[in-house]
Image 1: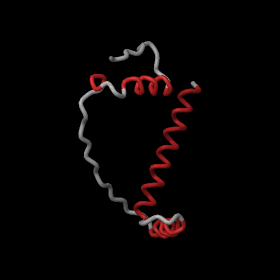
Image 2: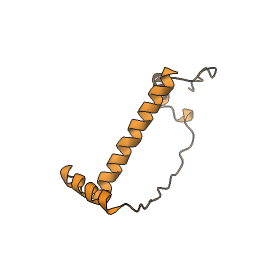
Image 3: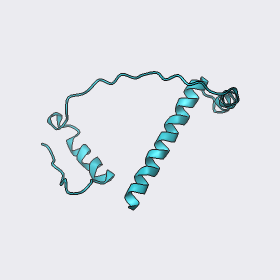
Image 4: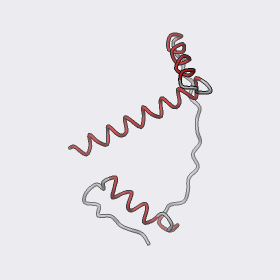
Length: 91
């Protein structure tokens, strides 16, 4: 069972969630899975930033500076995505 939304307007997040939940157990509603290759990125950071990151790594009981930085970046991306969505809703 495939649900065809009205394409004359953009769907809200709640509407999208409802559709996804309705189609979750229906394999015919989904495209074939795709493989995604993760690529490692290398950054060169100033010594001052590395020292601060090291301090916060210890403060937050993270295993490594890398794991703490990944957590910070993920949180920042989520925050930006949320703020962007809120700004789009206000228009």
